Image 1 (tube, helix red, strand yellow):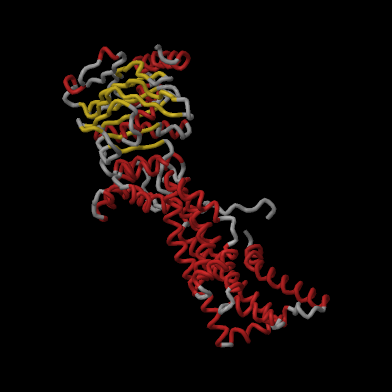
Image 2: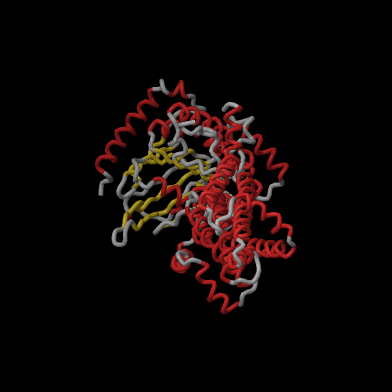
Length: 261
Length: 281
């Protein structure tokens, strides 16, 4: 690949962001609607939010709930998914339960959970946990199921016990698929974080956003959308780097050029 | 050396009383039924009895679907027979163990480990300390002809190289019996020939007991002391042929040897019979 093509590829995301903001700016100027501030107005409101101690505490509280919900969900879901993938009995027990929970929007459970657990951290973290769990369980399950039987037999012949085989063969062999699930889970953690705060309006990034909406501070609303979006991009980029490092052994050996490049 | 097939049930006798002093594996009236659907059962192996002597290279030869791999998996302890029993050194086989090392057609390497990591896995699991395990593994990697590839991942290797790693990985924990399940079946003809030569060279050094499943007549005759010919549906032992050819064997000499040629022609004819008609019932 030429140097020009490489640098073009690197710069592409930047161009995409600039393009999006430009379209936003033009559309906003053309529509002249009070509830649709221009991109520049929204960006100008960002320092106000990040400079305000109260807002910053709110955003950090959201982030903490998200991290705990995501972390606990991953710790519970990976072992469960792997077990389901290797044991028919475990899969037969949990599959129907998960099939019932999967299509339900987790935010729809929020009112009930609030009745039980109040509007505090526990209820919101639980909703994030539920949102993250299902894709992680599902991908761990599929990953574990696809592990080659002969690989496990090879391990058994070396003297690995069933538990050792699960941890030392099934887990690493399924890791690429497990991490795909975690990546989906990470995005869902961000979504459920905002929606939970939208319903249980007490604190958090979602609370800032919807309070601003109530008060007609549309530049703040859009600024918060940009902040949440940026958070998502950063988290995903960090996760992707970690993922690529962990499963380097499974990546295709050559970077295949796309047919039209 | 004696490999004893039993084809009829009246010929049954206690295996222990007649076993040769050096028998390492005894398969005693093993049958295997697989449930293919809710109502239908498939008899994969029917009443197989076989004794394998220590240090012998024994091939199990047969058409696809004769249950020859299943028989190997039963000896490996990966599959439990529906009836009958398999023993190693007089002990009933109840599960896999490091005394029986499998090498599969699919290689089954650990893709997240390097070549060295794969070969060291068994010795480390057996409690060999890392420096010793590493030194032994490096020597084995050199023996199978992969010196310089220690830090490569399986995805970076060709099929033949992967199978060399798989062989080294199994040899590394010193199994008493090698269980080879069509190990060269997925390789191209040239690579296959080279691996057969190398396997024979390695084997002729320490003469481990080998149970080798194949559907290639040439391969079975070239490598083995005994060829166990199986017929299909259900899988039965059709005949056991002693391959009385001198060792060490060299391919270029053997291919010109009329005795080798006769074995191949005779066994090929037998193969055609069992493949067309199934087993006589």
